[in-house]
Image (cartoon, rainbow, N blue to C red; front, side, top):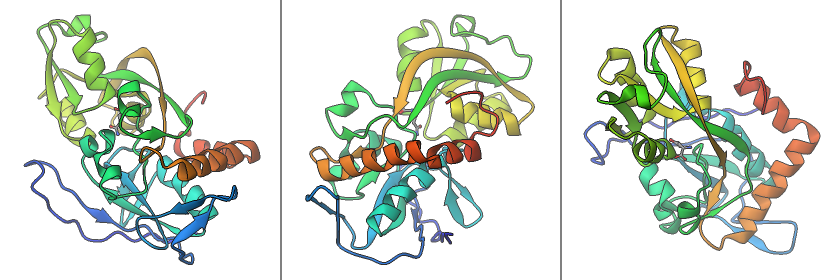
Length: 272
Ligand code: GLN
């Protein structure tokens, strides 16, 4: 159905280790500047004919590169919205910090942010979230057979955290005596677990379970019941687009498209 193209990576000076890329995802549709929301109000888009998404790669299985494409659960969910608006999705890969602070949305870098991003009261002050579209919780990952099965067991040890995330906040709040080591993205974080640079790492369960499925030398050793819910973010006050996202996700849940995507990206998951 869709042929997505990725432009070559563009290096930035954001951090020594981070690469920021502009990625184009095309689904071969027609273009319009504004798209009717169905309720009379107009949705205006930062780039004509495109629904521009800010995200932070990689965050498998929500968004990651596969060959020349960016694929994942979030990508597919936003594609449903783009399709409804009769535009194509364009993905901008950018550091998570600018996404979660609302800075990128306010600067008109994108129409929405879909980044496995947890709805939190602090973030809600700086951007508006769609209704929840995915449940998550924090989890610990370590080398298989390691004794690090709780934050308490990591006292005096190194715990990798991803910068600006709810996992970092949770670890700092609940991990007294644990030395946190910050990483800019989840790929660097997980590599650090594998190489022994850190004793364990904290991140969202969906991402960690996908990683251990592919890396048999690692294991998810604990899950913390943080009861998180992901939302798609829009600029504060962009009610027309927020409502459109909610309408599309609701329809997709009702007609089985959401379930099909869930099965596609979380084949081993016991529940939603
Ligand atoms: N769900 C986590 C958060 O919102 C992690 C998101 C991410 O790293 N993309 O902080």
